[in-house]
Image (cartoon, rainbow over the protein chains, first blue to last red):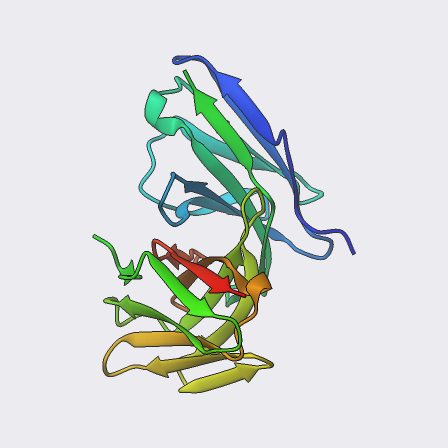
Length: 116
Length: 115
């Protein structure tokens, strides 16, 4: 059973650029969530994808967007990068059972994004 | 608006002793709580969870206590080992059909276990 894998592990971008981060879900998981963790803080929920649609969003602007693919892998896209976007971006996969609860949150190791 | 708070940024204990990490929450809709451990350069690793229908859950050296009236939970590690040194995050989520699977995290507590 493979865990959650994220790529790349580190990335440096210039302010104003766009970035795409990738995540492969754990086998058997059908839901993926993205979190932003700034230095010294806990992870902050960005959004969640289920059945290839956004299903819940945190307090992040529209320039943060995502995709979920039929194989349950996912991308996080951030446009017009700002210096404050520098953070660790974590992907978590889980199992959603119908319209009910979500279980088995498993996190990847994250992508460290630095915006200069 | 910090709905989950870990008021102690750090904790240092001696190997073999008990570590107690605390977490407070404000949202009464939270009914499922999780503890994660995080080492540098790794993602958070699930440790233990508790549902609001319980007040205690044990798993080996780890026990989580939930006091719903006080909106407080704690993680006890007994006995503490040097390998337990990491950042510990408390997280909460409302279960049920309205749940989007959103975890609300505290700021984390850095635990150092000294040999």
